[in-house]
Image (cartoon, rainbow, N blue to C red; front, side, top):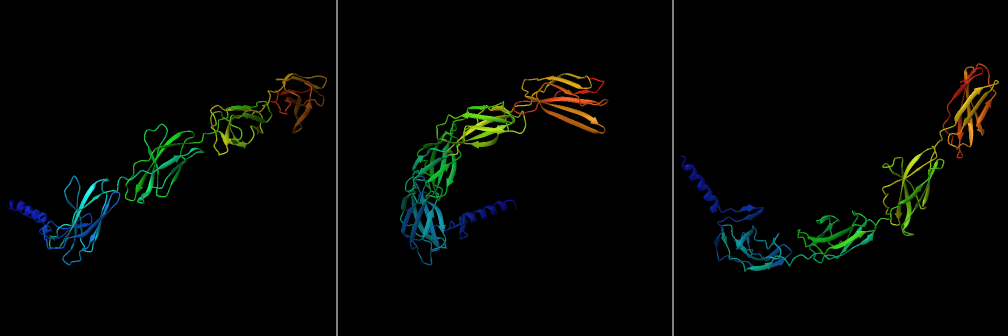
Length: 423
């Protein structure tokens, strides 16, 4: 029994590969005759009128169909310099009269023959051989004419329409500065397209470009000649900037511009409360000066100025910012003496920084259950006598100086006095 099993398997394999079934089989959706269809029958009509048309990577065959009822279809054979004739396709219908052989190697010579076959395994004599070249020559590269120089923030490429109508797209390749290999930027799906604008570039950097053509069946041409393009330089940076530190509630900015006259449209002013971060645009101006106004005294800001040219290109902000600040409050007067004498309060003080132009004396006390606060303003002397006091009431005084900008100083220390007592 064990010997019979291998014999049975061998018999099945022989039946399969001998083609005894007489049926067709299919590869890749194309019906192929079985091996039993190798019987040559010279009486069968052979193919006449075999012609060819050549594409870039394909060959189209055409022949006169045989409408004899014996004919079940056609067998297509191909050979090249390296291989003998090989069956490449079977067309299971006698009404077929065309076949296209695709994905061929460029510039290769191919020879074709076509024969007819019957359902009972007979084949006709093959047609006359048809030798063709798989392509009409290598797909030529596109003619890349130029790359622009000096456009703002872009490089424009121009080329000629490819003469081969099988071309349906172009491949744009670019070599950027400090890179070693070309990279594909984009594929343009139209043979009639003749320009491309590259905006992903750095100012004043040179880029190399080339272009390839691609056909409907994905044949890609060699690269075109290389052209070089670059965009317009950014305006010169603003390096000389001055900011005031002695103005009340404002900082005045002035700067110098080294760019050619007439090339700059305006300037952008950036500021930040911190030296190295958080810069935001404060203003745009066509002047080379600007006033930044504040509501608080002693405000500090850092500034950067940029130039914007007529094409909207903006210079760099620069690394070193310019500091500026408004006038801050002074330290305030120093009370040198405070005493009660002859039922009056006598105060004397001195200016701490020499900036005082006048003073305000503040007097605080309790009037029964009500707290009172009195200001004596526009006082230009550095001493004060208060005779409006009553016994058994404590009076508290402090002094504020006002500078030429009207900015009040920090208050002096407080002193408290009463009749028959002194602090």
